[in-house]
Amino acid sequence: MKKISVIVTGASGMVGEGVMHICLNHPQVESVLVVGRRACGTTHPKLKEILHNDFYNLSPIAEQLKNYDACFFCLGVSSVGKTEEEYKRITYDLTMHVAETVKNPQMTFCYVSGMGTDSSEQGKLMWARVKGKTENDLMKMPFKNVFAFRPGFIEPIEGMKHTLSAYKYLKFLFPLFKLLFSKSYVTLENVGRAMINVTLNGYDKKVLDCVDITKAGQAS
Image 1 (cartoon, rainbow, N blue to C red):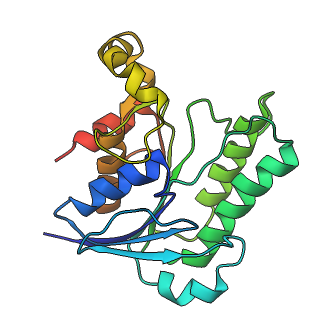
Image 2: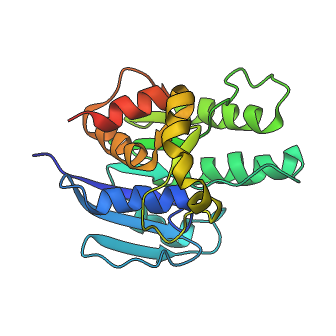
């Protein structure tokens, strides 16, 4: 059984923590490196953590990021209250710097984008243009594979530390959301499993919407 070693960013947030949790408990993931500004608050035999404040300068830790099979990039911020220049620096510039640092021709890079991302880079929504450019430029890099994940509403994993507090009040509505908005609904468990599965087996699309994420996450 093939095993992989992965880097996870954003593990102090809901998506990154969930992806890390799935990786740590997956039999085909042999090691997980978490890179973040804050401690993820988890200990596990498979887990190594690097705390680093400046994601725009990864040169002090670059050697420790080599020879991994995958990078699951789960960092992200809201565009609310930010100019396009500010949002682009946090979203595009930072992502591309991380990708440039970790890249190798055997690596799969999974980027958490968002439903509604604008691949044309020409639309009216600022965040969607920036995310679209980030996806497009990642696809041009010399990785084994690059996949853009575009989740909509994400059902969190029970018991995680960094789930947004509002979700606990919405929990009873999850089955209804899933029924009414099935094409824009995905579980965080399937996001994590899908990242592992596309790394191990590839996928027939480079951009995965909620339906694709669920399909890839449920693949054996």
